[in-house]
Image (cartoon, rainbow over all chains, first blue to last red; front, side, top):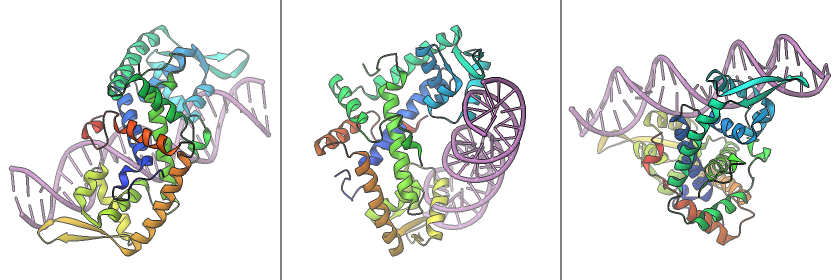
Length: 152
Length: 152
DNA sequence: TATTGTTATACTCTATAACTATA
DNA sequence: TATAGTTATAGAGTATAACAATA
């Protein structure tokens, strides 16, 4: 049974997961904000930090945002000199987005801020419990990046 | 360590929790929508279903929404004859919100829809794993209903 | 003066479609 | 014609402050 007692509807596991997810989201959001980054700007920077560069479309698909929204995110990041956009020579329709040195510098701070947030969120859990939580979340349907979860 | 390998930033536990929470939220939202209810309308109805009636302010505090937003939620529910507002005779500033018979009827459908969603989300988990997930979520800081989590 | 509920305003976020330039 | 990126528009949701009625 996934549902809890009817006496407290907010104790339903679906609501609990949604609520704790919102808390985690809010905390990460705040961590990025202290670095002057919006949540998705920070997430995009983290992705670019680990891969070096990506096409704008791939970036949008990975972040699961509409391409038209990706434009604004990257405009802001580029105005702040954190990323650069270049045309792909092999297909001039494509933009190749690369993180700059300045971007890597801010990213280091942002990653530390996110790590601090995570250590705060999960401070009461032992390492094996953190691993257990990760494992359980991974087995919730839909698993992350499954497009079905955005059907609405 | 709460953070995963740097090679995939989106595998950080903070992001995973945020993402799965968003999925759960979206699914519950959709379940309510099939009954013609917005997410918070449905949640308010569930609260009223288990308690019978609440003051408008208590309802807003429990749902953690601003009182000015609670007004609109209840206006819609009242227009649909799902709840009723009466003045509290002992303090005429207060509204006492009560679920109607019609509201209980729709609530039963909505609760079944939410249960179906939860069974879908957690279908791959054994009962003891569901209990484990509930227990782990409860020990994430901040725990539910702690006002700190909405500091932003 | 403080509290409950209400209204109004502005701001953010998002969804959608139309447009351009390239292929 | 199809695709990558861009722009513009409108809609939902929210935060904030001001307000009336009551305590």
